[in-house]
Length: 159
Image (cartoon, rainbow, N blue to C red; front, top):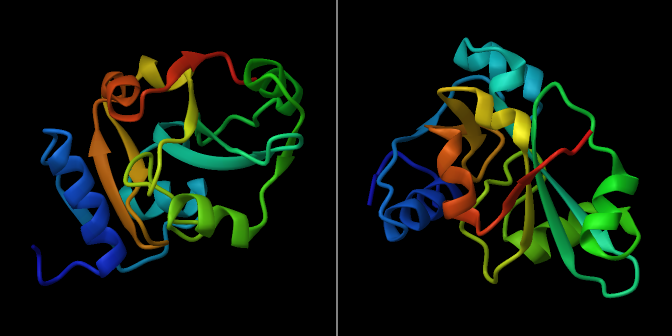
């Protein structure tokens, strides 16, 4: 355990290690809550931020995670077709209950139960991307080609 990591960031680091991916989780001095803030804090392009957006299935109430490039706006109708039901924007309470993390810090891993996950295929064009690591100040760097393995998700067009 890293004494310098917050409990939420440590949970992400532990989840990565359990997946056989002992990546470095970093807590930044500046907020990484939005894709732009994260890119500014890290010093990368906004497109290299793997933002996690949680939706709620209208009929089933199940969470659906879309991991999108920081510059892309998710086409909710397209994702609803993939999920097989209409999707609604999740409330902060639903996000925390489903993922265990607050909006602005939702990582791609470390959830209490598996979540249906769709990955923006444009992220796979980069050699490295950055994802949230449990808090609005924590991030980790990864090869985006690991995202399907890490999450059980499928890379698709999200625009």
